[in-house]
Length: 280
Image 1 (tube, rainbow, N blue to C red):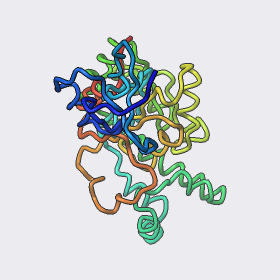
Image 2 (cartoon, rainbow, N blue to C red):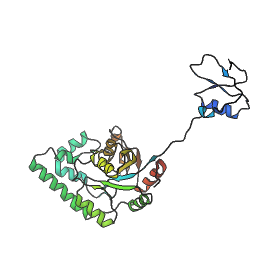
Image 3 (spheres, one colour):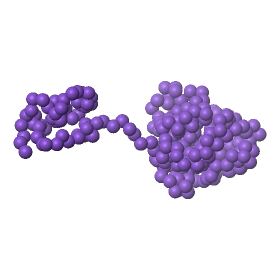
Image 4 (cartoon, rainbow, N blue to C red):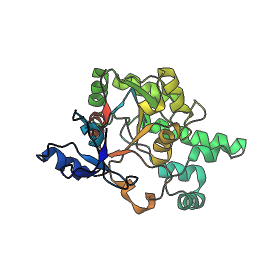
């Protein structure tokens, strides 16, 4: 075997996709010579055979989709039409001045339950009673979000599990299941501690399903609760933003950003079908 230059051997940089196209489209009968940064002079190995070296030169664009094993939903504002006036509820709990101060300090949203944990026992009882009153009023106007039944049906057809995590109380979850005939399991309410944005509820569901967090996507309408919970757990996240509120510059520098953003639940399945392996 002799190493020497050959005038008919095209010199190809192994980092160039253009070179690959050149060789495949050329009429050269000689195998290519590969030129790398560590090759001082072009040499070609002579042999009685012409080796098929094309795979070395190819740049594959094929990517394997992640297998999706489950979808975890938020409830209020995601599976149900928003009916709770959260700003009024926060003002009732915090007072106007404290509400304005906290809103300025927390552009992605106020974690009211976390704030209540720092209250005195008497103030906590009053705060929880105020929240419960707002939630009871909302139950009378509970409406399912358009697209919920269709999306759940499509997920069922692919045998993809459905779970639920909400900061609402268990009685609200039970009413949702009863009124609309669509069940989620596990369905974790705020009685499960710690509640989102802590990743514990989502990790609990993954353990119950015996899947990895990166095989699950969290779908919700809150950056501070749903997206943060999903990201901290290591799951994919999809933000439901019906009004485009999260396009505002005030949310540009939030810590956790969603992998996907949709304007309606009808758009969620298209995202899942395009980005994930949904095979049963």
